[in-house]
Image 1 (cartoon, protein in one colour):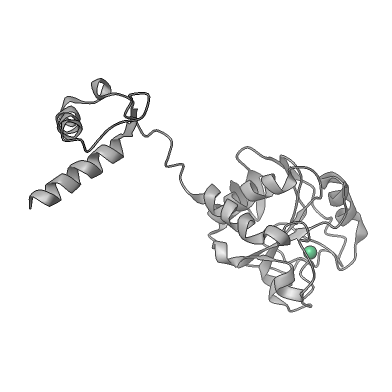
Image 2 (cartoon, rainbow, N blue to C red):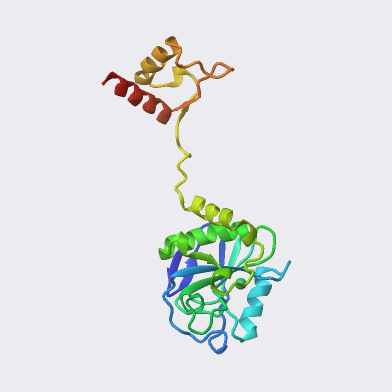
Length: 225
Ligand SMILES: [Zn+2]
């Protein structure tokens, strides 16, 4: 993700569409400067309405209702720069939710939540806001929002954390048989097989990762000490 002047200019794997609330809509967009410290999650409460439909609504309503991003499946509409506060948290004109948090509305359409998880992970990386500052709307006002996410809130957060982790499992080498291993490893493995420590799988393969072999070698050295 790249952000310039509070506007997301580039996202990985998700379309970003600028759909800003006009500055002339002074109720929805008072242009109060903001340094965001939190990310607040909502559901639109509008079953089946697309991200675009919700975006058009917030751009035209001009009331004390606004937020920063509307998330659909594979697409995100930006409604306000993240350097301006919005009216979404229900905690008043001076409330931390309204004045210091980025409001994200997840449209109630298929797979929008999946896109939201990927989007929030990128937003965390780009802004430095920590995962414990990602909160549900309920945190600020007690409202049952995001109503579709709250029943599995912990999994939602865990899925964002998963997105943040480097994909460690990719690129680790696996050896099915002794013959595929470097000679240095073969010596050890043959010895352990002969000693009966390693019996292999039913189909006769070993299927060891390089990390597993290295751990075993370290363990053997520790025993020798
Ligand atoms: Zn809400």
